[in-house]
Length: 503
Ligand SMILES: *Cc1c(COP(=O)(O)O)cnc(C)c1O
Image 1: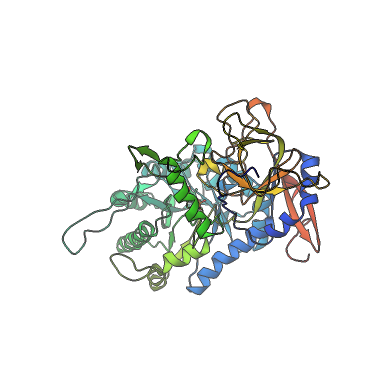
Image 2: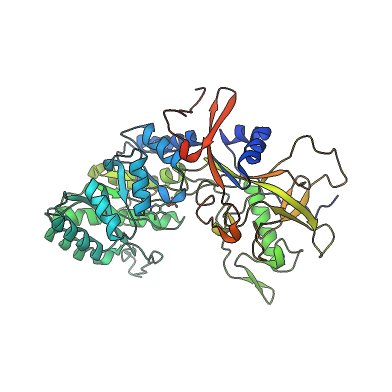
């Protein structure tokens, strides 16, 4: 058996309907036969379910407010159209570019459900204001620019949130006075300068209406987020003391996704990676890549640049945890603070809202032995590292082997095997994974590998046209009774492809 060491699996976490879709092996093969490799497959019905799960957390805590889908996680039309149709008073969309704003409008979102975030060019700002979307203000300069535009072009008064950053802990009562700054960000205005922003809001009252404050911290650290949330409650008090009447706290996204199913597998893999970096076991990666870890005279240094792929709580569960944690100064959980003040809570999940919403398929083109070491295999796929960018985001999770049916019987190469997955570019660095991936058996040309749960940032975010290799087509699939229907993503409209269960 061509096993390289004991196989170290990182089995993906799979839920319905993704599990049922992966059982449809001939169907998935026929899609790739027709549409080519790579191919992205989306499950629009699941995004609605995910939004409902977030709303269930709101209900549990008696909170009001809106869930905004952070569009940047995926370019798909099907997902956005499905959400627009799902519940007209429900989920909103967070757009971060002129293109995303136009897309959201074209998919049926009304402006009251659209939030414009991130740094904005003038056209984006103008269109958001013109249609009456909410503008999440990134800086004092942007606020002035928007207000000038409203006056100059005779636009309706614009609802704005102020995005804050650089949160610090208040001096603690022990007198030690440790002030932990949240990780620095290119985005938002430092909370320490909020006074200036509020003065600008007051000055430009004819053009903008302050509806609330916001943050988005690119971290999984709950403590940092709970501190930021508490600080936002204090800023809201300051607003009200000045006679402003904001009512929303927007806590951004970053609720995360659990990609790996099993805590033990994750534990074993990360331990083995460290041992391999130290030379205590054979390398687990191409050319000894350490994912940020290195061996300095027998000690591991550096930080693993890995997404915490196994997560006991993620998505809505993470929101529930955040809402229930005691806040550092006021001591009461955020949910209580929000309720007491009758504030709305807005969230902007991207990755978590498209959890389980799709997969990426690639055809196995070639399998060969590497020159180095017996039993090391290179598996070349009909895709490149830009087409499935799990690695780019530090997400380590195994693909699923979907055999081409009717192939040969058992061979001496059956049984678990460690392989390197390489892409279709003429480039040494084009590796789909830099780690050896363990599969239940050696793939054969014509088999498919399915990368599950790629809808969040891993499908089309980094896709490119290098070498004129094809960029993946994207299809939406809908379950109808016992069978599946598919259409190109851009052809998906909720009225013709309603989906849902037993449609
Ligand atoms: C990227 C982004 C999000 C979504 O983040 P996820 O980690 O995908 O949940 C939400 N809000 C803003 C402002 C963002 O930039």
